[in-house]
Amino acid sequence: MRIIAGSYRGKKLFSPQSDAVRPTSDRAREALFNILNSKLSLPWNEYCLLDVFAGTGAFALEALSRGCSSIGLVDIDTKSLEKNVALFAKEQDKIKIYRQNALSLPQAPRQYNLLFMDAPYNKNLSAPALVSLAKQNWLAPQTLCLVEVEKSETLDIPPQYQFLEERIYGLAKVFFLIYQGQ
Image (cartoon, rainbow, N blue to C red):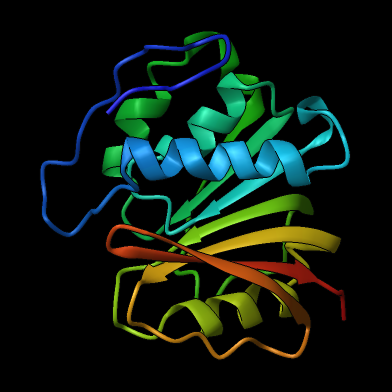
C-alpha cells in the first residue's frame, strides 16, 4: 500500500497484519479520488474528511496528502491505523483518531464535510453507522458520502441521505450519497 498522489506521493504504508482489515485497493482508491476531484465544489484544503471503519487509514491519509485540512479516523480497533498515522509526523495536528464503535457513536466533537466509509463486507453495518453519524451530528449538511460495500451487497439508504450514484471496482461497490441533515 502506498500514497498515490499529493505531497506524500509514493509514501509506503503499513499493510494490515490481520485478515480482519481489508484496505481499499490502490487502484480503487485512485479511481475514487479521480471522481472526487470532479465532484468536489471546494478545494481540498476546505474539506475535513471522516473515515469510518478506517482500518489502515489509507483513504484518509491519501486525502491528507492531497491537501485535506483535517481527517478523522473512526475504528473500534486502531492498531493498524495508528502505525500509519505515525508515519505522518508533521501532520499530527490535522489527524484525530476516534477509537469508537461506529454503530453507537457519542455526540460529535466536531462536524466533517466529507465521508468515506468501508465497513466489513456483508455484515449490514453501513446503514446503521450512517444513522449513528446523523443522530450524533458527525456530518455537516450537504456532506458528500462515499460508502463502500461488497459488490453484491445492498445498502438500505437512511432517509437523511440522498442517493447520487454507484460505481463498481473489482469486488467493491461504492455508493455516492449526500447527507441532507436532520
